[in-house]
Amino acid sequence: MIKKQNDLGEKLKLIREQHKLTVEQLAERSQCSTVLIERLEAGALIPSLTPLLKIARGLGVRLGTFLDDSPHAGPSLVRQGQADQVLRFSGNADAEKASVLDFHSLAAGKSDRHMEPFLIEVHPPQSHDIKLSGHEGEEFLYVLKGGIEILYGKEVYQLNVGDSLYYDSVVPHAVHAMNNQDALILAVVYSPA
Image 1 (cartoon, rainbow, N blue to C red):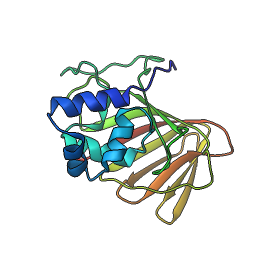
Image 2 (cartoon, rainbow, N blue to C red):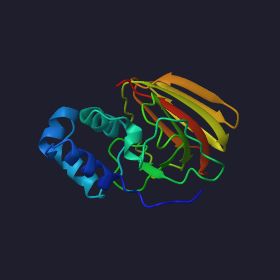
Image 3 (cartoon, helix red, strand yellow):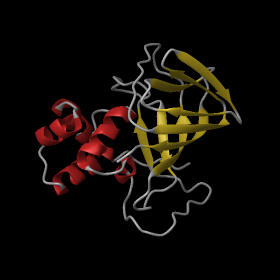
């Protein structure tokens, strides 16, 4: 897959300014700190999925809006090898450095969608201090390559090629690659508006 620069910060700032919101107003709406939003907009922080979902909700947009360049009403076709828009997330709620999840959108541009389908490159954790986080919605994960471990509340699920897991994402969770090797998964995330 082609890797592009992660321009999440620029997109976030543009959307915030289009909604005529200050950083402080967005922080209040999203229940995130102003420091977090400022660091995201500056590109100084790789977010975990949880605060980004809160920010999307605070802006009244879908998570995928941070990837969309020109939304359209028809179907969204992504040919093999063309899921090149990358949104990088930390698999750790407090991580500030190396990403362990590279999201490749499979529906960028599709307006009014209710699901967010992604191919996700899952990398081994950068530390053993893995923090769980939850958010409203549901997630479906299907392993295409390698193996992943999902910490879900007090449970641990190990999935290999061909395995899948569907869960309520309000339960604190974390996903990382196993055996110190990269993995590739298909993920569908649903977050209510």
